[in-house]
Length: 189
Image (cartoon, rainbow, N blue to C red; front, side, top):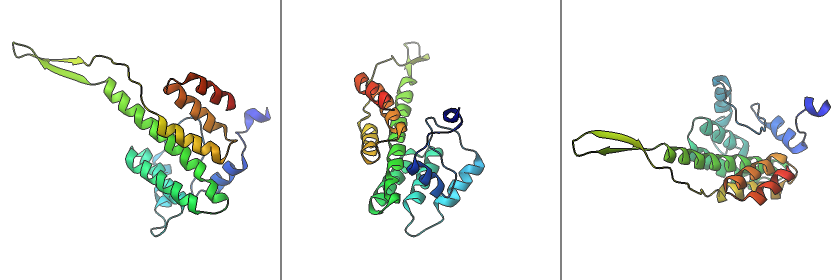
């Protein structure tokens, strides 16, 4: 009953969530944020104009990610990772969470591009001048998740006891058709 009533416990994760200026939580699925939560993130993210902390930069990435500004979000995550590398102590370990988010974002960007490719309609004109739309022939593609996988592997090298990392790695390896590595990471998770 205790395990069912409580979430996964990790001291670094708890400290990261407690230190955040907004209510953050690591989850194994995405959730839609309310307008009030987005406003709270926005205010906390741009609280400091000069030399923002890695957490504030990370919040900027979260905000842009929620606004579907994927390239900007990725840049903020990368900036937060670099800033965390410069930071000593526990705050430097927060890099793990920034890497996890950037890895998931990179995978989501690939999935978004794939979804567009699969829904393209081709317009053609016949001899009589009639225009017809047809769905592009379905072609199987293998997408490259190398960058997303590397972010998760880098995160696991820093802190090896967060099961979300291995769960994400399992998913990424599965999407990459590397099923043995996928199973190994699900087992670790």
